[in-house]
Length: 479
Image (cartoon, rainbow, N blue to C red; front, side):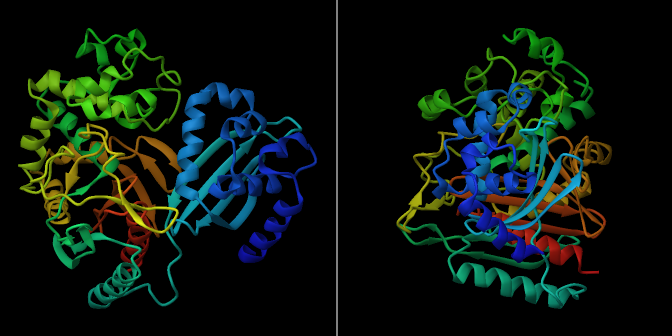
């Protein structure tokens, strides 16, 4: 069904309605509309997303997500998908279309669920998207530890040899590396090489550390997850956030706060030095949806949590994380480095230009990351972190269970906890977080029952996720 379906749908797209105008023809089937949606994500399609959203999404969905929020979401999804092949497409429940696609641009797999309004126009009324593991090659399951290490080495080395990967990889079993290696240049101008101690930008992976800091303060009796923002930040300018939003909602992406990225952030990013500077970008903005209504991935929510950490601890967020997360785990090559810190030794991130040349991401980066992401860690440090987390030296075992256990169910095999994703793969559970931005991609996965840790850090955009997907498949099928 898969490849044949992809070809037949491609024919429909060539001769059927254009992606932006498909909603004008009520005779278009849901399958054709789904195929047109994937085609619209292709950067070569030239999709005008404002027009596409108006013509293809229901008024109710646009109101629920907000026009600006929906525009940002579609732009981000388009960047993640790029040029894609539809591998499967089917109606699973009434008015719900399920798609699995392979991104040729980024070499990873994604799953979409598109819900349709009951009207005859078949407008989209819901949208869920997530990365999914690549199919495991035949004969690669049930590998012994030795064979597993050899398969990992062969796979990652080929990715590095073809310049699809630059960074570091560790797969550990019971805290000890089964495979550990670094590849590529940390700085292409000086030819400085990546090592297992090279700090690499984590993107959103830092959300784990913010959640653990809150868990420490809960353990110390200074707060509770049910506390409102106003109990700790009584002067917070947005009354709805102050009085209605809870710490639980900040950490589980159900606060209704969106993300602070936008024109104001772009104009001020090189002058943002403190958590308060980040919060000032959005503190008086209205929420994108009511608190507790549902999952809305947010960078602003964890940033408010960072401000709460500062108020409760009497320390800057950066000092608190340095002392209570990094130092407790003996992470000596991890920090929120400023991008102008020439002595930090971190890897510079790179994206490939349209002409095929590697361009650094320095201009894209803000001066420093914050509680929602943008810090740095080395692969060796993240293994120390995994061992410290499992060993209870960062926070109590009860709090480890609390933050890593899913609170919001987003798919049959995925829920979101407090700064941690809670996943099932081939009957095996793993927890962790990923991160991505231009020039960087990071994946951290801890299999509590199997005793495996998978760490993949890349200083190329979109390079870590496909590697981590395959390695997690190998680990989950290793029994």
